[in-house]
Image (cartoon, rainbow, N blue to C red; front, side):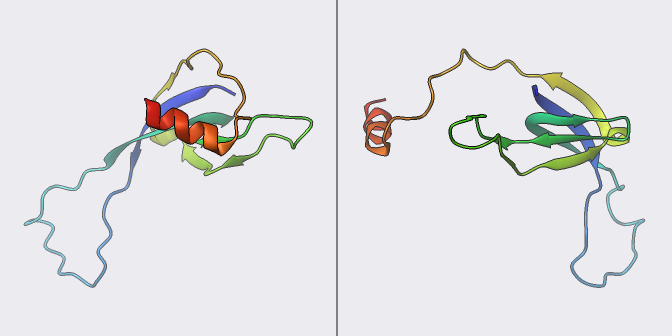
Amino acid sequence: MRLVIVEWLDSFGCWANWQPMNLDESPSPEPILCRSVGWLAYDGKKCKVIVPHISEDDPTQSKRQGCGDMTIPTKAIISISSLILPRKRRSATIPAKGLVRNAKSQ
């Protein structure tokens, strides 16, 4: 999987209550530009699926897991750009106390 940023158009607006249909007096309706970052889990012709949160694939613990997947219709996508990760950090096996101390010292 590669890490990507996707720029895409989405629908905008949803009145909570019944409203008069005065579209001539409102600003002209426009779709909204969205940006989403995640791992490209599926790259199909009709849609793309990105997942912002993934775990490492560790055979001693569990298989890779993901959370927060979003399916974006390909027709709504303006652009997809790959993001470059910084060099690989060591695995997060440091106890929480060590992480807290490190965070305070920065």
